[in-house]
Amino acid sequence: MSKNHSGDKHLVRLQKYIADCGVTSRRKAEELILQGRVQINGRVLTQMGIKVDPAEDMISVDGVMIDKQTVDHVYLVMNKPRSCVTTVSDPQGRKTVMDFVPIKTRVYPIGRLDYLSEGLLLLTNDGELGNKILHPSFGVTKTYEVKVFGRVNEILLRKLRDGVQTSEGFLKPKSVRILEYLPNKTWLEFRLTDGKNREIRRICEACGVTIDKLRRVAIGNLSINGIKPGEWEYITKKQLLEHIGINKDGSPRKDAKEFFSAKKTLNKNKMTKISKRTTAKPADSEEFNRYRKGEYYETLKLQKLAKEKREAEKKAAEKEGTTFVPSFGKTSVKSVSDQQSNFTKSF
Image (spheres, rainbow, N blue to C red):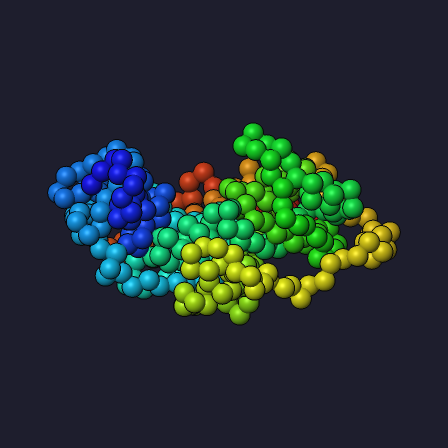
């Protein structure tokens, strides 16, 4: 165990070793260390920067010894549904993606899709590979289909493509194209390589565009085709590397392929013809701001949580043999129904 032995090839950073053993992600491993839940040779160490020798040091997490050599790595491809969080557990008691994966092997999600986003999510206990997939330097393309309120015209499309400057840096997608015009909404396809937190939502908000639905359809050439929301499938490491387009060492494969969508780009002439036939409002109209997460989306979230709470209370009452009396708290059924009704009438 050391803080400095940079020249010793046998030493690895503690948080990396914990992730490689399949306990959790590297970021979460850092939290475990700071919380004093990790021991090295029987001693609790909470400082960062510690390196360990896996052949000599005994490492335990929450009192359980871990050993990279005994880990059988597994890989899962999941179609994450809306209204669940991308974490192993949630202090607020919300449904997590792990509720859909009832397996004994301890796995965790690679990257995140926020509460209201859906689509392709990878779960594994292979922390090293997970880090390669996520890191921007490996250039893995993620493909998203995004439905926004209103009509996206050529000028607005150019703004989305050009990127935006934010307090956390410049955000620019690899590509953006229009897939379909609905009566009052537009389907877009975004492709990203950076994978920064809430990147698409932040780009859209900066351009005055409000998102209705966001789903990740592919990572590299790996897609969710054939997997229903809430369902998942096993995949081998070889298949995963091949579809994502990286080698075992993380370098890009020369034969790497990106996801090919069967949905064609809406061309300029068709955009013009449709625009002349309809009276849809521009996607950057301030009218759509009321449907952002602060209002409509927050209501949907509260409705989901209220429903789960009522179901839990009902089960508890049945178990105790008492009469179930629903408690709606601040979010009443009436308020949710009214807002949904108003939302439907608006479109």
